[in-house]
Length: 284
Image (cartoon, rainbow, N blue to C red; front, side, top):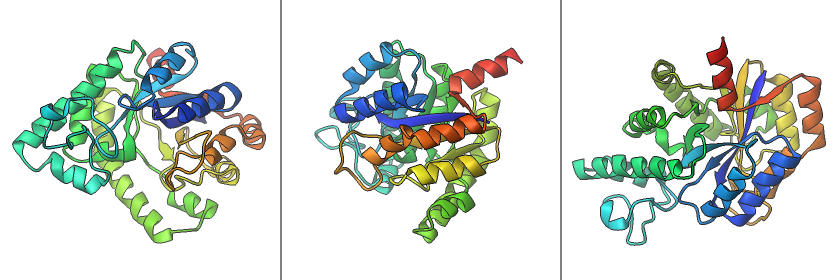
C-alpha cells in the first residue's frame, strides 16, 4: 500500500508549523496542507522551501478563517475584518445566496490559488478547511482551479465506517452520518476528478477520528485497511487547549510514535504523496 500521511492547517500558527516540521523530520509525515491565509503562513512557506522533502498542498479556507481578498471585494462572504463565519452551514448559504455572492466565492477561491502560486512551491494537492469544498457549487470551481494550477491530486474524504467504529466506538450516529454523506460526495465527484487527470486516494482517513488520532487508532487502521492507496490526515500541534477536533499534541505524538513506524515497516507500507503517486502513474 502507498500511504500519504498529511497534516492540515500548515501556517495556522507557529506551534502548528513546529509540530509539522517535527512530524516530518522525526516521524512519518509526508505532506502538509498550507493555509495560505493563516497567521503564520510566511513562516510555513519558509519552512517548506527549506524542506523540499515535504510535499505541500493548498488548504482552502472559506469558513472559520480569514479571506485572501479584501473585505470590500467580497462583502457577501466575510465580515468587516475579512473573516468567514465559523459555521459551515452559514458560510455555505452565503456562498449561494445571490449571483453576487457566487461571483465573490469564485473570486476568493481564485485569490487563494493565486497566492499559493506566489510561494513558488509545487502544488501537491488541494483540500479545504472543514472539507467545505465538497459544497456542490464550490467543488467544480476548485477542480477547475486545481487543474489550471497543476495540482497533482485532490482529497476526496472517504473514511471506512467499520474501521472507524472498531478503533473508536464513540458517537456512532454522527460517524455513520458523516461516512454516508462523504461517501456520496466521492461517488459523484470521482469520475470528474479522474477525467481531469488528478490523483485520488482510494481511502482517506481522518474524518471519523478527527481530534482523537491516537496511536492505537492509527495502528488499528494500518493493520486492517486493505487498499492500494490511502491518505491519513492529522492536525498536529505542539500546544494544547485548542478545539476538540484539533490541532492537538496527541496527533503529533501519533505521528512520532515508534510503534506506528514499526507497523508501517513490518507491513511494507510505502510512505508517499500525491505528487509521487502522480509521477508513478505518468511512468506507466
